[in-house]
Image (cartoon, rainbow, N blue to C red; front, side, top):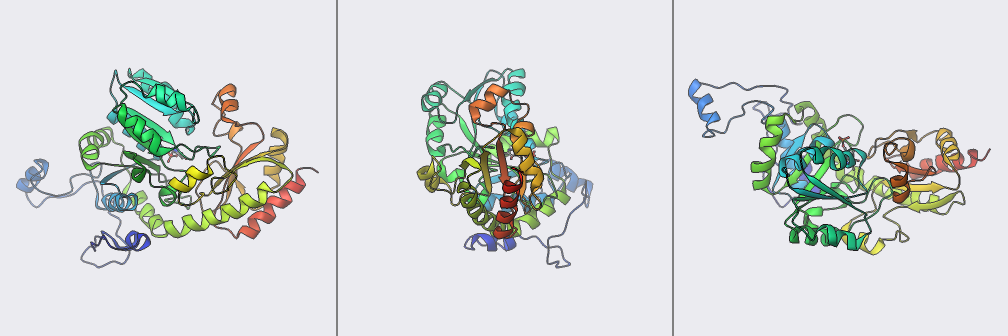
Length: 395
Ligand SMILES: *Cc1c(COP(=O)(O)O)cnc(C)c1O
């Protein structure tokens, strides 16, 4: 069904559906590595690009193609390539685009593995990399005052939920000749549309909200059709960064309920954030959906909801933070996020343990900071669990 006039949720259920002659309701999974040809001539014509026929699942597969079409539609992007993981998407986008002698600028507040790619991997290939603090306006101007190939930002950032002005960084990036790439995982495709704010490329870990049910890993690169086809596709095809058709199918099922889940999780998170912000055991809370977020007015312009992640600092130390986590009965300890189950993590000892202590301090990740990913449980149950654990931690 090809219609561009459907609402978002309808499109994610019906648009671009490819059915086999069996007329299945749910998309078929094409769990096949290769494809057969009617004749040697057809095979030759396919390899010449004269005939539109699948060749090999590393190059393309009906199930992964269906996911790419739906993700592109969801994002409002011209094209999409899906990858084996979120890190596969981010590393391929950067390595496909930048070459030796180029310069890449990145926000300092990045997901741990992204930080490693910028700080360690790219310089190995002769790519100069520069980190800038999220709030350092002069630093961004200076870093982007010379020709640059790509800029990578994450907003809201992990784990402190700092916000970057996408439009402003897009303008600076374009003046420096760079593509602006946005890791949009924390906002989710429902909460923020970076392309509409001037970004050139949007990157996802589909492992998070898009699956949202803790089952599979996956990633996506979205951008202009020419860039995807000429720059990214040769890289992902030839380096083998492809998504399993099975995982693509699971992610297609995830997309069907994404708008519903995402809004429900954000509305739950807003209620939980209000409860925690008013509690005497909490020193500081960071939630993009609250009026007391330092970037509240910018958030209203570039995000459609506050998201499902909350960061907060307890009054106390690591021991107290651990006691609190261990006292939770419903919310479970896991470093994943965007899941239908609420999950909590202690960034300083897990996701950010490899970030040097002084860098952590600079990002505000103290020993008493916790990151909470809110799921689909009833908000009353989540609040009751948090309340009893805050009580218990002092005993
Ligand atoms: C999880 C995550 C990634 C990496 O995704 P994987 O699917 O785990 O490889 C990248 N960026 C952010 C912000 C993430 O949360």
